[in-house]
Image (cartoon, rainbow, N blue to C red; front, side, top):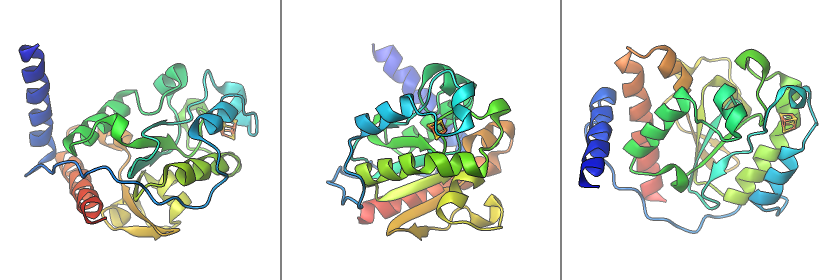
Length: 225
Ligand code: SF4
């Protein structure tokens, strides 16, 4: 058992070294989140509707819908673009290679995945992992808005341009937009690179360092709330 713990700790420290983390934050204490107005439905009810939803063409290509998962009153929410192959098979968000990197980033922040809420703009896998089309994102967005209302996060981290544009539309690319807090309906939004972009540029430590700088800002903001 002690060996397993040591191996896990070593892996985590290697990740800190890889992303250039210079110090660790303790995880902020859990608080009761302020709720934003919503339908009042529970996360389970929302997920049940998503599982059988056929509101857009993505329904026909999915194996399983991926509603999202995490702490029902999480202060921190991550929003990505849409499920990929592994997520489509498992029905869970961010479980493929990019998801494993996101999990390590969350761990580096001092959290477990179960401490945060993880969701996507669209809940069903777009073919060939293409970005969701506008009509697909528009059809699916009410589910995410309901989830945000139910969870009541203090900070939303948007992963990549598709997710960021839903909250704070801009023609700028992610390099210009990452690392600067925006506000959406009173909630702090931190745009950062999508983990799949980091995976595609695996040797680029500068990208990982930038994401870590963004996450340090997120932790500092959470600590103030
Ligand atoms: S992507 Fe969203 S709107 Fe489209 S079928 Fe899936 S759950 Fe419904």
